[in-house]
Amino acid sequence: ANQESLIVAAYAKFPVPQGAKLSYGTSGFRADALILESTVFRVGILAALRSLKTQSVIGLMITASHNQVSDNGVKVADPSGGMLTQGWEPFADAIANAATPEELVKLIGEFVKKENISFDGPKQAEILLGRDTRPSGESLLEAAKQGINSIAGSLATDMGLVTTPQLHWIVRARNKGLKATELDYFEQLSSSFRCLIDLIPNGSKSGETGDKLIVDSANGVGAEKLENLKKMLDSLVIEVRNSGEGILNEGVGADYVQKEKVVPEGFGPTDVGIRCASLDGDADRLVYFYVPSDTGNKIVLVDGDKILTLFAIFVKEQLSILDSDDSYHPRLGVVQTAYANGASTDYIKQLGLQVVFTATGVKHLHEEAEKYDIGIYFEANGHGTILFSESFLSWLEIRNSDLSSKSKGSEQQKAALRLLAVSKLINQAVGDALSCLLLVEAILQHMGWSIQKWNELYQDLPSRQLKVKVADRTAVTTANAETVAVKPPGIQEVINAEIAKYPRGRSFIRPSGTEDVIRVYAEASTQEAADSLANSVAKLVD
Ligand code: NG1
Ligand code: ZN
Figure (tube, rainbow, N blue to C red):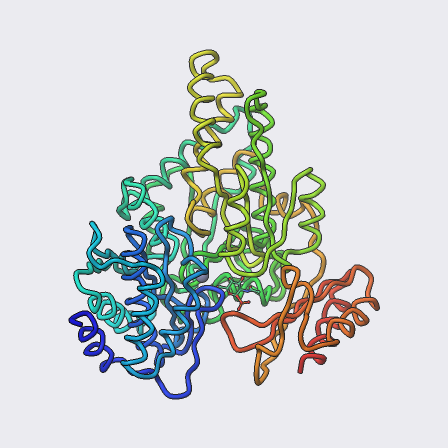
């Protein structure tokens, strides 16, 4: 009863705004920051319950990633550092929309019973809170704290301004009993990067990578973090731009660069040919690009698919040097979504790798990648990582100590050490722009490749992405990893008829999980054809 009155008392401060219907979506709740307080308060409650249920530390991140600065959002990190288990999403939706304190208390009571959550288990709830640089972040953080505190005995620890992947990394490390401060994060990234650089073969043309990297930080939280990381690296020259002087995500950042394929704010003719990268607002996405000539604002985009390809080539190379003994055959697999450029999929298959497709959203890709010893996943927009299975890592450790006693310094041992370093550098919880950036840089130096050379691995098929504002985006439903529209009935047949008009044509539609729109994607052999296919499919949706 005491517990109930705590919730009822806090509820009064956070009524649900009229007419808003919120849903947990592709990656948490996202909306105009002005209507989010009540949602964040409730997610605070959910996080505390999740912590009690799992008897583990849980993360709560306040961010709207690449969305405009007036938006905000909230998502929960599970004990493993991954996304909230999908089984809890319906409960998140239900409490977010509960319109009276009685309803909220009732929903919580029923859920606690169903999930068998005990309020007097050995551990009290503990939640780590993080936020990006949005001005609305502070008051939303307060709402989250009040939600957490309305579950008696809970502890909320404010981690301050962090990137989304940092918070996930810290949650994971805490629950594994590893070193888990922000400094530990920087130390692990920089030391494993150094390790990869030290293992570059003699005679590699690493000088040809080009000496400088310029990073567009989207005027977001990644800027300050990258500056900190930079101080701990010596074999890398990084110039950070868009570190807060302009507006968050406005004409800058990974989403803008990937969708518009033009230079972000602060970049121009003087940067021709130089290796550049863009982070998004909470630094969980990364794309590379270069300016091909000093005329116009066009860029050559090196997207998430190409980062994935680079990683796959490197990992595969190390595995083949290591040449597995009979006792263990590591399974290497690649996970993409329907947004992956068709040319990337063809290329990765040519490498002899297995490719599987999932629906959009990290939670789906991550789940699939976990099925391999080494699972590499990426969304074309630049979110991705490499997951290593525990059993593979134990095998690798043993193999490494074996090799170091028998043939210390051999090529095989170096390959084992490189894979171990990658597993420490790359964020095992979630896609992380900072760790991916360091891995890209290490691999380019290892290979002696410039960004131009990397880009030439394969040529992207021309593509176009559009969004169509509709009255009700739930009118569209999909199947087969979103490649087939099931509803409205008949629409897929008409889309197929359009696709058939274009050589190498491919197109699909799906409701966005983060915006009130239907997304249209089209690919074809020329840009004109891709544009025209996208436009005609968009008309079918309208
Ligand atoms: P939605 O709005 O569901 O398409 C977008 C991205 C996802 C993912 C989420 C979360 C595209 C096509 N979709 O989801 O990949 O990044 O935002 O940020 O880029
Ligand atoms: Zn993001």
